[in-house]
Image 1 (tube, one colour):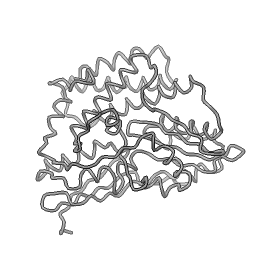
Image 2 (cartoon, helix red, strand yellow):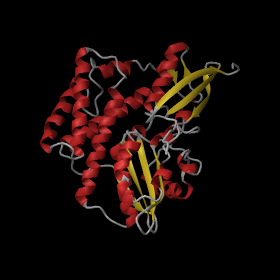
Image 3 (cartoon, one colour):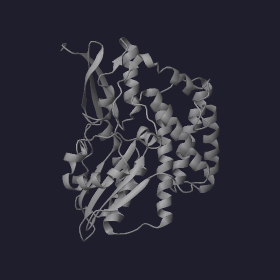
Image 4 (spheres, one colour):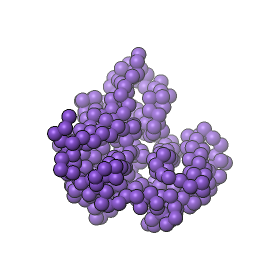
Length: 364
């Protein structure tokens, strides 16, 4: 069976009188999982997930296993849950670090060396969390991450990056005049939406998961949504700089939890739900937002229904958060404004690449 699917997003920005008048998004197409999963033994598919989902594969595995347990009416042992949470958090940290540093910054030799150490140590830490490396490697990896973050100017959650760091220079590039954003009402996906989302995944399948909406709402998910949930006052115009600062703060918070020994995690990292006889679902907060898996089993533990919903489908919906943020905004003329638009799109962190094109209304 062919697994061909369109693994990129096309974004067309239409300008009128210097303002962004419209955003047209042609979304990616997702892996055809139901034809692959239908009729298979539930226990046989866990090893398939990393081949289908190369990004956030640990989160997908945690969501799948938690959904299967919920469908069976089983409760995972406390140490099993703790192990899954730790693995998800380590993966979230590694993905956020990759999004911050890989291919994004102009680096001097010192910063480049620190990033190489950082990404290698994050990879080692992920193997430790997945039981694929000896536990005595953990302390060295944590020490290397702490040292590399310090060299890159990331020290405390409530402090901006060090003034001479690559991140500080990167933040300075986000000139507020390059992209003037309108104030828009923001809506965020949360655990309160889980049962609604999972129920519709099971009843509507791909017609819902390809273009999700909740009774007219298309909420944002991801770092900015998590940050917003902890902040009493939220800026209505969330530009690249604000979103980058929220990402840096989350990196510091996640690493502090890992450095402290991975105790109780404050946040809904993994949640599972029984959805009726032989039906279950799970939600996992991964790097890019809230990931859902929903499953129905027959009496022989074979897959009857399965679907998943990734964060990208919310954030890059044709009427979703990115479109709301950009429509009506005023980019500076020329490459400066176009780069600011590209930076804002990148701050929504799609799990696939995107193509961006600009057009003038009235021109073919």
